[in-house]
Length: 173
Image (cartoon, rainbow, N blue to C red; front, side, top):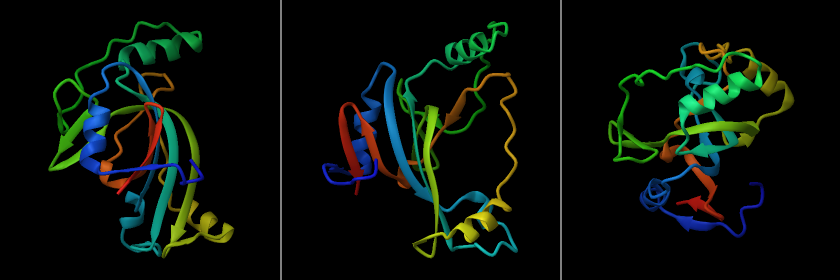
């Protein structure tokens, strides 16, 4: 998703409608930009200055239980995982991959690949030295408790800048 020429401009509302109208598993690539939560901690020199820009691809309308069992089987583990009802966070919009929470909308997706991550500081690309300092503030990630490698993300549409899905490329305006 480097070259932004050829992207169709689309509003957040229309993108929510478009993605929400998909009923089967659909591949999607998302580029988003937001201040990371770790950057909002006190005594952080990047407070209010850093933005994480990341691109990742995955699936919407995926079956979590099936994805976890497929992952476990690929690892040679017993694939008898049974998903529990998800924790109450937000409200699923109908029978779609869209979640509403406190007036904001999110897309529920399984991340298959992280394609690119970069940081900007005050709107400019972070230098290698700045990136190394940023890494000292990153939280330690825990592996999924079910033993699989399935990663679920729910990016907020307000943070999404570009989406590639359903054979087209979109820039959110």
